[in-house]
Structure formats: C-alpha cells, structure tokens
Length: 100
Image 1 (cartoon, rainbow, N blue to C red):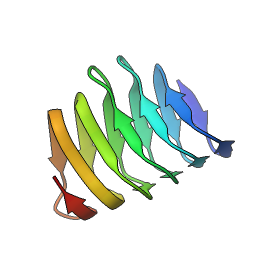
Image 2 (tube, helix red, strand yellow):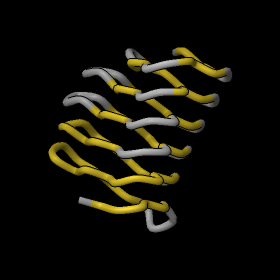
Image 3 (tube, rainbow, N blue to C red):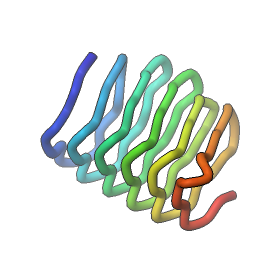
C-alpha cells in the first residue's frame, strides 16, 4: 500500500492500494482495480473508473465522476457529484455542492 502525505503537483492516477493524506494539485483518477482512501484533498476533479473503489473522507474542490466504480462519500465535494454508473453511497454527514 502506498501512503502519500505530501503534495503531488499536476494530474495523478491512483493505482493499487493508495491512501492520500496530502494533496493533489490537479485532477485525480482512480484506475480500474485501485483501492483508494482519500483523506486529503484533490484540488481538481476526481474520476472513479469502472472497477475502482474510493472512500472519500477528505475534500474534492471540483466535481466527482463515478463512471462505474464503488464510491463512498463521507467528506466534502465542493462541486457536483455525477453518479453515472457503479455504486455511490453518500453518508448523511457528507457535504456536496450539487448532485446529478
């Protein structure tokens, strides 16, 4: 498992088991097969690809797109949650700007 506590500049793709406690200064994608625990911040969009699993306890500054993965939101989405495919669970304590 990879644990990142620092800042990643630019767009980033999560692969394998990954815990983000730091920040991604760009867009992030959870690739098929990735298991992501997002405790930190993504300053752009987050895309969840088919076959990915994401636990969002941190913050996404723009939009989140579930394109077929398993997404659990307990944190904050400033933009819009686009729930197109897969399974999306939103905790009652989560904060979401908009939902489509």
